[in-house]
Amino acid sequence: MLKHAFELFDEEIDRAELSMTPLIDMVFLLLIFFVVTTTFTKETGISVDKARAATSQIIENKMMLIAIDNKGNYRHDERRQGLDEVVAAAAAASKRQPELNVVIIPDRAGNVEPLITLMDRLRREGVYRFSLGTQAKAE
Image (cartoon, rainbow, N blue to C red; front, side, top):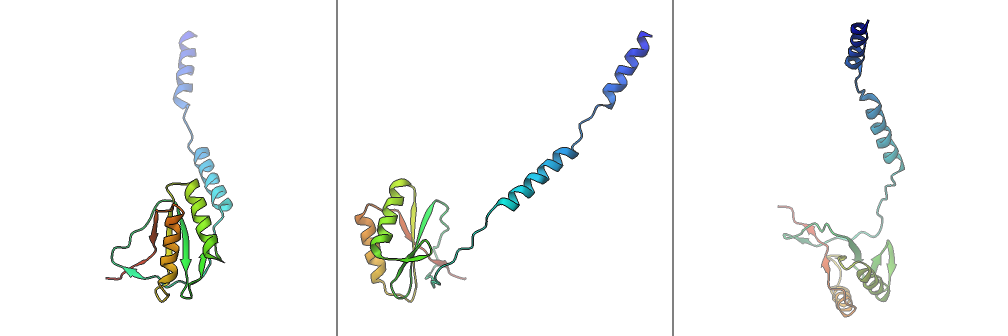
């Protein structure tokens, strides 16, 4: 009788297994949840014909974009803003996030004066981390 009980116990241990199906189902459901709830934003704004440069680099850090169109108008946050507004926004953002890069995207057909004015004002406000947005040259 005792031997028979041990044999039943051994059979139960042999039959115990871990099913991966519920785990795979949960991962799949989480994936569907995140895909459905993620919001995708399409950036809209003005069309700026960027200058081309052989040394263009992709900036991976946090950044603030300021565009200057061919008429010298400044754009930030998808709307036209004056020079004072753009500089104030950049200075405030730079104080909140010291690692912030301000990327200025001038139109290649535009006048250089608005660009120089913006860069000068940014420096006066203590914003020194800025660069020009360009497009890589096709080789």
